Structures are given as C-alpha cells and as structure tokens.
Length: 303
Image (cartoon, rainbow, N blue to C red; front, side, top):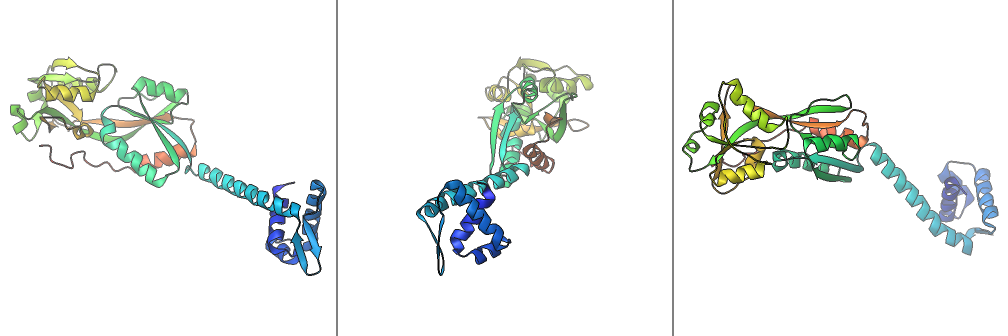
C-alpha cells in the first residue's frame, strides 16, 4: 500500500462518490477504482459498501481512514520540515564564542538570526581559539567567533567587524578626566593584559601598539580574561585596553575612554568555518553575519 493509494482512499472516503473523488484527484474513474480494489485485496477486507445512492465506509474503512489521515499528515509535515531544512530554516547551529564579544555584538547577531529563523536550534560553546579550530575540524562546531585567526586550507576566516579599542580605568584616576587617552600616556601607567593563555592573541595586539610607537608598556599583570582584567581595574590595580564591546561590562568605579592613536586603533572580530561546509543553516547564518550592522556598545554615557 503506497501513499498515493492512501490519498485516493481518503478523498473517496470524504466524497463517497467515485466521480467526484476522481475529479479532486485529477484522474479518471477507472484508475481510482483499481487503486481501491488493490487496497481491499491487500487488506483482505472491503473498505466501502456499495449502495444504490453512493458509498458508505465499512468498519475496516472507518478504522483505516483515521490512520490514513494521520500518516498523510506526518508525510506532509516531513516534507515541510525537509524543505525548511533545505532553506536553512530548520536545524542546529553550534557557535563557538569567546571573551569580550559575548557582551554585545555576538548576542545581537544571534538574536537577529533567531528572529529570522526561529526554528533553528542555537547552541553556544565557550572555547578558546585553538578549541574552536579543533571543534570545527571534528565537526562539533558550525561556526566560531574569535580574533587573530590565521587562515588555513580547510578553514575560511571572514571579518565581521573592525572594533574600536578603549581604555578601562578607575574613575578616580587623573586620566579619567580626559576625553581620550594616547598610547604614550598609557605607556606611563601600570597595564593589565589579557588573555594570558592564547598566543598570538589580543594581548600581543595591544603590545604591538606600543612597539610601533617606540614605547614600552609597563605590564603589571597578565590575566586569563576580560572579566578578571576589568575587575582588577575596578580594584585599582591598573589600566586595561579592551575592545569596545567590553564596555558593556560595568563594574564599580570603572570608566572607559577611547584610545587615541594614528590610525585609530581597532581589532578585528572574525568568524571561522569549514571551507567544505555547504549546509543550508550555515549559509543562512553567514547571510545574517554579512548583513550585520554593529552598533556602538556605548549607547549610554561612558561615565
């Protein structure tokens, strides 16, 4: 018994008339009659009682009708889900995240994608750069977000956003009275660097700014992540350079000021994914990434 025969049976059960059912099915009456006869032969029971004024369902027909409608409904749902998956509207997206970007840009991007594709399941994985690359190669991750990622033959690295750099410092510090802080002024202050577990990474990027201006950074501490770094700023241990997104992290006494240099200092936020991944969900997500319009993390005053 195939689905085509089941559909013919359901239409005939609704019409209880071979002529009207054949019109709905866009076939002639003889093929419809043969389909029903084949079903009855296969089941070993009549499905319809032939009456002078039409048809009536037998007990076997009434039982089959409920199951046939259920099976056809499941098949329609399966086709719809397969079509949605083919358009990237259904499926699973495993996203690697890290540090400061989770405070502002990535959540906004994910929210934008979810509003367009509400049936895609999004799973977040907090991972270092090396962990993201390994997870991508092992197909445990669909896409990762990070900084300072070198392209590889099997991976694509794509820029999402050039993010301005800020200085986090305590509001009681004399430099907090300035509208912006230069690299030279920063070189005279105790500096907190992060992360201390990734090379090449953001900490190296910060140190390179001093090097290019012929200056030496006074590194006070190197810590694991931006939260620890800004918490130490809050306690008065020193100053810290952060991407703009980290200014969403508001801890007691901490203020943020632009870092002044020529050209304006920035850091790239990139996404990375497998070169051979042609999944519709990734394609749909990359469209959202490429159309993403970052907004300033400082929608409220930096105090």
